[in-house]
Each structure stands twice: as C-alpha cells, then as structure tokens.
Length: 167
Image 1 (cartoon, rainbow, N blue to C red):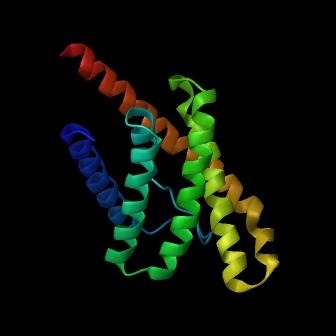
Image 2: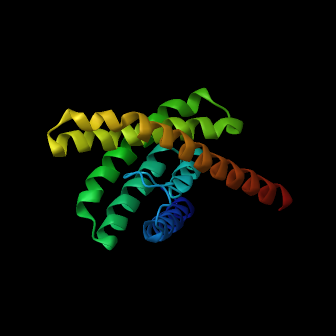
C-alpha cells in the first residue's frame, strides 16, 4: 500500500470518527430506539467508491471500534459492528450493479443491512425473537436515513469530481 492511500485512509478514518462522535452527542428527535442518521456512513460510501472495498472495510471497523471505545459504549460496539459489517457487505455486493448516479440505492440497501445486523444482535442478546417484530419500523427508518446519507455521499463525490477537473 502506498503512502498516499494510507494517509487518505487515516484522514477518512479520523473524519468518520469525528462525525460518529458528534452524532452520538445529538439527541434524536424521533422517539424510536435504535434510529439514528448514520452520517459517518457517508465516509464509508465515499471510501468504498474511491478507495475500494478493503480500505472502506478497514476504515469502518476502526471507526466503530475506536468510536465506541471513546464513548465507552462497549455493548453498542457489538450492535454497531454487526450492523456496520453487514451494511458494508451489502454495499460491496451492490456496487458492481450500479453506477455513480445511484449511490443512494447502495446506501439504502446498506442501511437495511445495518438494521438487520442490529436486530440479529438484539435477538441474540435478549434471547427472544419477539424483538424482530420491531423490524418494519427499523427498516423504514433505514430506508429514509440510507437515502439521506447516500445523497450526501453523492454530493461529496460530485464535488470532488469538480475539484479534480478544476485542477
């Protein structure tokens, strides 16, 4: 791996952790447990599209591990890791099937994967499958937030294209 790519990964990891930490401090105006915007996923989408699946996965895992370690939420790490990794897998599988104009689709499907991963952990931790009844609410929220983060990632990529063409 070259120095430029490693430096880019380190910067993207730092940015994603900052976004994760800020978002963790913002109260959600929706009274639905487990729902959050997931703005740090914008960085994962950006990395997946510009650097590759391995690099995006590494950034994701480091962000989840260090971010949850910093906020002291070790149980949250289990949920975040399951959701984040499943989201990443879904997005990696979908990426070859879409073009850059439809990153929001990849993001929405990834967000659904994230919620499925979190629900699976919740069922495992609680020992009751009744938690899965909560799936429709989380999946709908995942589609909405996935659309938002996908649009943000699309805007960032479009802006980066303009910057590169200008130089």
